[in-house]
Picture 1 (cartoon, rainbow, N blue to C red):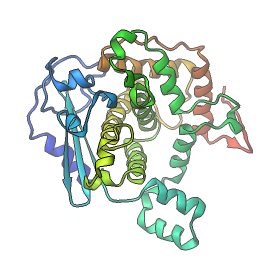
Picture 2 (cartoon, helix red, strand yellow):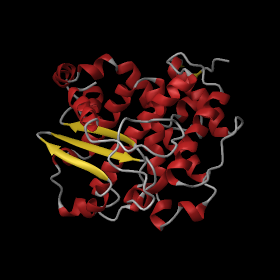
Picture 3 (cartoon, rainbow, N blue to C red):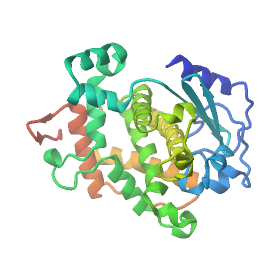
Length: 322
């Protein structure tokens, strides 16, 4: 674990703990500075645990729920809810753009420089490639309608069956509402379960550095601050949801004994997805219809998981291990 990240997590241990409520997966993290008060900003604005970006009217509104502390080339972000806590550290470092440039558009010296500046990415390039394949649609390999993490999140939104409870304002049903929260948490849960929390965290942080380096310094323009869809409100929410996704991924990895050799049967994937939805139902206090083993997205994504994780993607074709 990154030393800065470890210190941020460790600091939570000295902030006191007020655990309460029954979390559907047990203790997701160690301690909390917010009790399970149903009148709190956490409950009114977002839910328990996971955050919904469309419930915040400003950056100051978000800061009533999470803690943001800026250091020298680093930002610490903490969220505590219902007796649990997560913390993330985003510091200056390799971005998604650096990786793409080194791989596709850079010179020999760019690639050599990347090798020395980010040995982790080089050492874990095979796992990063697999995670990338799971996160993108690949009709050239899996045919039209191939689902990625985004498509799974989209199918989850469609399964919300208590709209009067879930959609409290019009922005909740937009791409920056449940869809964005489900996408970040679901993707991070899968990557953590299939690979590791470290890989999931590396992917999440490199993505945020690339799109919004100002998140580290806090030096936003007024236009950025007022942009609720693409500004710091949206991105700090993403950072926290990534952490909740990693916590869920660790819980489910242990529950189902998932590793790189796991055969993702439709039954296993259905259980995994329904556990995620059980968390969303608890966090946002709403109803969600469960997945079935014969759902098209379940059959397609279980095949994709097996093909990608086994490395059986060759010449534009895939094979499914029966």
